[in-house]
Image (cartoon, rainbow, N blue to C red; front, side):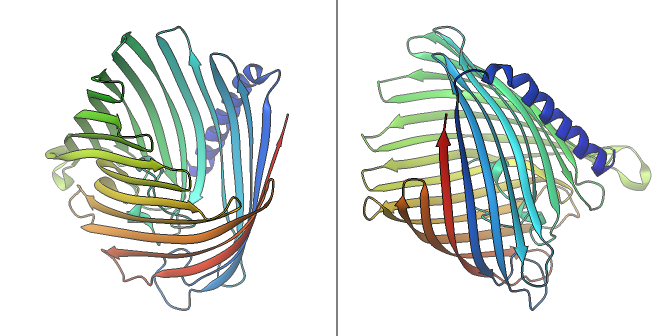
Length: 396
């Protein structure tokens, strides 16, 4: 299937989902829209190889959202579109997508959710920071190639309160990732699910176990990975302002790839540590979160990778209207496929200040640093900054 046909079908899939969700959104609902305007300077906006890469840019974006809240849940419909125009060297770059999400309490003991989304962006552009969820983070192996990634996702699941202290959760999903150009072995289909159990040992602390199984299939015949990840889980309200949520387990990967001239396929097995950690503080003036994750995931570089990531987000309110933010992230990606390179690393940091001029209007400035290391041609770091205006409108 060509990229154009796939994008058309993805768009139709999203539009169909939005059409189905529209009746549920009928009636009283809350509508909001956020627009951003940015003027900035980058020394290497796409982290590409070469010299004389710097440019000034202007970015505009709009993100509308419609939410219907009920006594038993909510349905939300959102979209986003952004365009960056460069003053020299580069063509314009667009980012866009849409999401339909629903959460519903079906009974006093059973609640369910479903999400359908589509996103399109150029990898390596913009705010590439660790968020705590690997599927939302940049593909380190593709940074610098200026390739567009189109991703369609569908997921659903439920939580069941088996006893006052025991909760069973089940979820599953499908993710299709396509790239605008590149050799075979890049596009992938990822599908699977997870089941978990948590037990409340106190009013503040829960422990449990979980197991996930998913398969990644690539557009190269015979190239796929089956991944199983059992883990123990832990979550706790450490204090009035601190929470922790983590998991620790093992990752078992069965990588199948073409055998070459001899034909057929060969399978190799890999075992490694897997886990995640989220430690957050919510105070009167300070908000802080640390994220960490180690897992096996798909890469558009032609195979499955072992990915280790860390990130920190921090915000402090200096006054009721003025605040400062800082975030930093690190990502390490190692391919499990022989012949597709070794380890690649990505680091980024951002710091900024913002001022709430009036309700709905914020002005600010940000400075940032990004760099990528490892296989391939050496790349110059991206150092830049921007001033911005954010307008948020809310209506009924």
